Picture 1 (cartoon, one colour):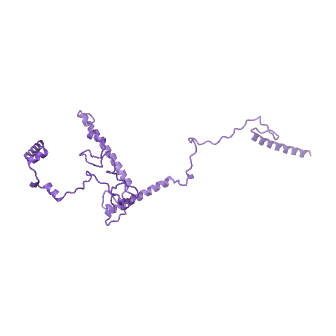
Picture 2 (cartoon, helix red, strand yellow):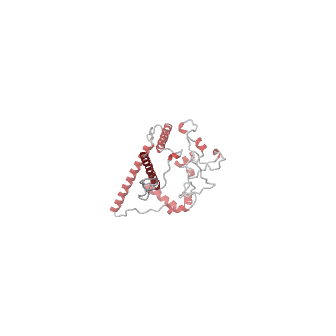
Length: 294
């Protein structure tokens, strides 16, 4: 009987010790020597766990993952698509070469735009270097001659007064032209818009022609209008007389009069003096005599 009671007491004491451990962990105290309560005042309290910190160098909110979007494409795939598109453009250019200039030495059969750009960049760098060396040589020659390094400045044409004229006339001869710096557009001189999609398709690569060389034409400059007017019904923007160098075409009579002398159409010296003045007529006679002496 005594042995059973001692064993039961030891088991109960062990259970009490385990309860003391659990109570100490829950209450922040140390493990007690016995009993369920377990003394918590005799040991140090364990520090509470800290929240997870971001890795060093990363501040602010976490970056959003690209996998959250269905439209995201990997950079490698985008680069491959760009390379394939460039190859298609090269193939299209090389196919058009056979119908445009099949025997061209400048446009080879295996034309590569990247190689062309490399050559252009190399030539530009060489040209820049040559210009810099030339400027240095000229400056040194001017210094050796006792002249200032920079040459004297030259006044711009008309001292830039033509910028304030605000008309569509040329700086020389004051003729109407579209190549004016401050061109004013209106109903009499409209600006031609870019051709529409239908006109581009009609005048484009798919144009029906008997000769492949004449399968494409440049669109005509047309007067802008609203979308209800067909592009074929819009009139052409008229050319100015200064740009219309194809018109008027000289006739056979005009060509003949340029290289032949017709006595019936010539005027006498007296009539010429009345037309251009005595001073200019006398000066022309002096120039004529000098040419005859030479």
